[in-house]
Amino acid sequence: MQEAHVGYVANKDELLKRLRRAEGQVRGIQRMVEDDTYCIDVLTQVSAATKALETVALALLDDHLAHCVAEASAEGGPVAEEKLREASAAIARLVR
Image (cartoon, rainbow, N blue to C red; front, side, top):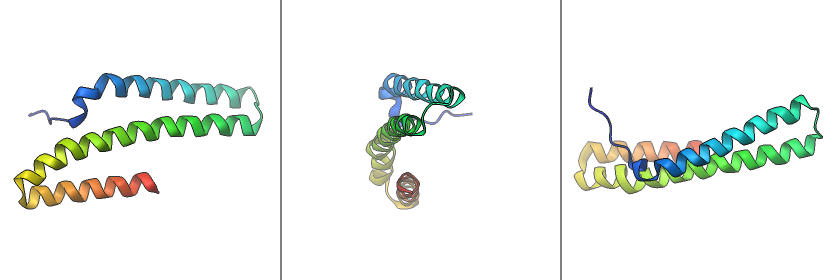
């Protein structure tokens, strides 16, 4: 089976670092709930974790546009149309 080339390969270490940080934040939130931490403090940490994941999502989207979509656009035709539809759908999911 052929491996798909991914646009984020050059940023993989940075993405993994950010994801590990977000994972730690989520674990911290879980501990806060277990310890009956004040609601507003928990919500503040949820907001921070959400922002961390949004940063990862935007970096992935940027790489997708710069690599996958750009290459498909250069090729043209149905491949380009499909990549543009994918990118549009991904953006729509992010802003919901």
